[in-house]
Amino acid sequence: MKNPTSISVAKRQALTGMVRTVAKVSAIVSRIKASKLALYTMLTALSVIFLFPFYWTITSSVKEIAELRAIPPTWWPHSFTLDHYKAVLWRPTFPRYMLNSLIYAGATTAVILITSSLIGFAIEKFPSKYGNILFWLIYSTMTVPFNLYVVPLFLLLIGIEKTLHIPMRNTYWGMMLPWICYPFGIFLMRQAMKAVPNDLIDAARIDGASTLGIYRIVILPLVSTKLAALAALIFLWKYDDLLWPIIVANRAEMYPITAGLLEYTGVYWVDYHLYIAAATIALAPIVLIYFILQRFIIQGIATTGLKG
Amino acid sequence: MKAERFFPKDKTILIVLLLTTLFFSVVTWRSILQTFMLGFQKYETITKVHWVGLDNYRRLLNDDIFFKSIRNSFVYALMVVPATLVVGLLLAILLNGIKNLTLRGTYSAPAFLANIVPIVAVAIVWRYMYRPSDIGLFNSILRLFGLGPLMWLRSSKTALLSLAIMGVWKGAGYYMLIYLAGLQAIPREYYEAAMVDGANAWQRFRHVTLPLLTPTTVFLVTTGTMGALMMFAEVYVMTTGEGGAGWAGGPAYSTITIMLYIFNTAFSYFHYGYASAIAVVTFIILVTIGLIQFRLLRTTFEY
Image (cartoon, rainbow over all chains, first blue to last red):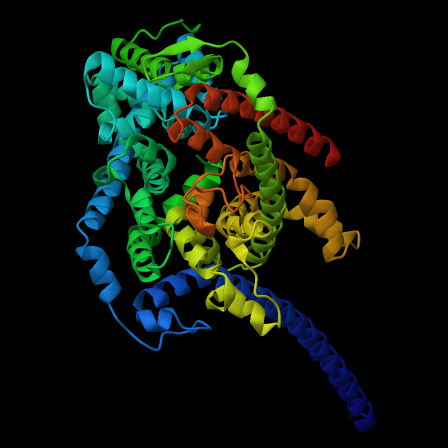
């Protein structure tokens, strides 16, 4: 028979051991919890700061004018009206600006996707000295900021108008001209081509496919994720363009939305309600694209670490 | 592998490469090179051009607005780049602490969304929030702390700072993403080794994370500085008509940047030659800065 006191000693020991373990675990848990709590508090605070201008845009766009002029401003809308949106959309110019932007950004994206993938394919899968030299020359132009050579580009447009009698200013193709071959896209697509096995190309060749046939049937589907990433980035950047479009277009009906929004900024800036409503509409396609293509956009930026 | 030929054998590919060469020769490369040539020219009208030697550059030396624009661009870069680095790194480290990928994605969305939305649209909203006196949002926030009101964009003292604050808000999401990619490339073993050696969280950050992020930081500082010095849309949108003047860059030239000055010189005054001379000088400055930064940052963080 066992000694009852020894049992109780063992029990007590086990108990204190357990208590100690529990205390240790709970201390760790609470430390994790505390650090987790701090982590999430900070992240939430930062998120609120980053989201606030969006909140302010949307809420201001539905406030009535009297409330917009209130001092101090109201933190959440007390009034609700869609009049500002109506006023913006009824202006004949506004839908045209949006359309111009979508055409400019959309067509530029399409062109860049085709040229980048074709040139990337040509340089990567048909190695030649010429292709290599060309690639490095293209790559090095990425280090020169586009903004610094807009003047000669503009003079080129005028030169084309004078010698070839093709209108370039105030045209979509004039705006698109500098982006037909896009160094960033060529760089990205050449990287993407590296992952495509040469055996597939050889096999298609034996089956009698032409070079362009291989590009279309074999290559394009294999690099489609990278193309989607490129498409998303280019569209976002071109939709955001201001400098080049306002150089090319001096007539309001050719302005993209970025330039069109400025129409509301006069010397005396009083029509806040119109700008805010217009800005909200201008933001909408980008926010939409962001939520649909988020994965591709982040992948595109993170894998290349390049911009512009 | 076979010895590489000079030209590819495939005719279609050769045509693609030649067309590409043609495009860059006519558009991109030609424009870059022509900038240097234009610097020595003067446009009377669009067709009447003559060579003026170093006149444009001589004029630059006595141009106060040019020096002001260089100074403003540098002050802006010095405000924006370090602040964005800190905020971006903080966001990345916090996000890296979240193991759940969906949650991490959700928390990274606000800063990243700020980064990708069109600058013109958000700049207008920021301008609205920066309104002077008590009507503006920022001033009513300051008032909660018993401060202000500030004139923000309307005062030559605070206008550039106002642009910089928006610049940090706009840029942090991109820095965050690049830093997050950098953080995830650091092997876990390094932290485990540091923990075995008894390093605390700060020491691990200082001696493991920061040195290993050096390539990322160098990349962000060099590209970020270049971007800040080339800033155009922000200042164009935020300062046009601010403070009563019709031109952007006010009040009293306190926010005129290099790009804004080039733009105004070329497309408001049609001084294409002079604008190109500014562009050439700017290009030389950019290259010099890029090289210096690259050298300095690489050696100070060498480990």
